[in-house]
Image (cartoon, rainbow, N blue to C red; front, top):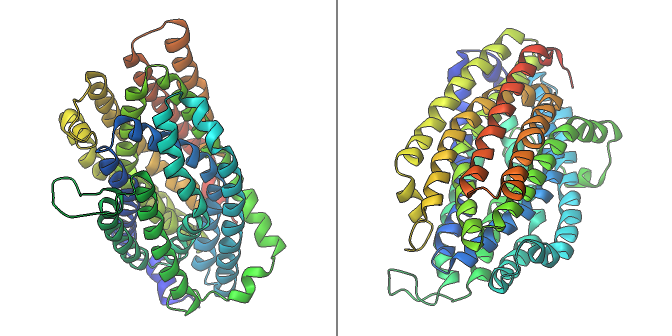
Length: 457
């Protein structure tokens, strides 16, 4: 017999179910991205070099994020489909294995990134201020990487078992904590006020962020141990290996991990080309990338929420419901992301100025923001189709589309524009739009051609 929560996710109006599950997820993911946005706003009061340092660290961090993506993506399909099939024991075991592997992978990632951090900063910049700021900020963030990865898993377990409100509440609390702690930790006197702070600079920004993330993880993990969700985590089972589930976690998620790795490597090359135009160009691109990530969060939230609906539907053999969910999710993504994209296109100078601490907004930056706004509509379309592959646990099509868009278009375009043609930086910005456009078209082609709806995990 199906549990009431499982029935709730496989019956009723599809779009209502998508929005009911996705809206808290969207809010939670928007708030999660607020960590970096708030950091960037306050870091802008230090200098462009500080913004550039945070930008570079973010790029290095997302290379290691690949380890999180491998297990994280597969866990969405496995937990959702097991819960949709009303197999409570398997749902619990998958959740436990996910938490254990995430923590181990995060420890490995922290060691790798910690050892390589200074050489990486030197590779991208000879600006000593950028390197100094980056090390102050990065080493603290690296130390708390296991909490970051594990907090993702806690939220995933709640969402995939139909509870999107608990992770949203956790993220609201942690985001508010970060907003208050950031300026208090960073400045001797908080800008625009007479309030005294701790004056820790970039170290303060990092400490505020990791403290907030740790808060979210500890409370959420405690709730799972106490059985406050639909899954009750058994601590003793975190140290037991389930070979079958472990193999599925890695095999299903590996294409998604490779997708993220190749995308992030393309960004590394792209950012190296941007660095040839100076520290200010790196700072502006960092702001643009953060704004892009924030504005696309509703799309990713809908992908996550709809992917859970799709996973439950496929687990319950409701294939037609899964197809309807993909169509409606794509429309929802375009609407929600569009609401954030339009202000970026119409008021690019104002948006950029929010992150530059009163500095003059460069003309090239305004052009980049408009390009980012257009790219958001493309990203929204990709998010809608991505829900199908995420819910089905069939991630290879997204890998193929990413390789074509990023390595077949973006990287060659950036190299030719910068190294051969010595073109103005505008041509480098246009590479983003071209790469995303090709990726979306190929993802749509693969969505129409592949048999994702018949995938069982």
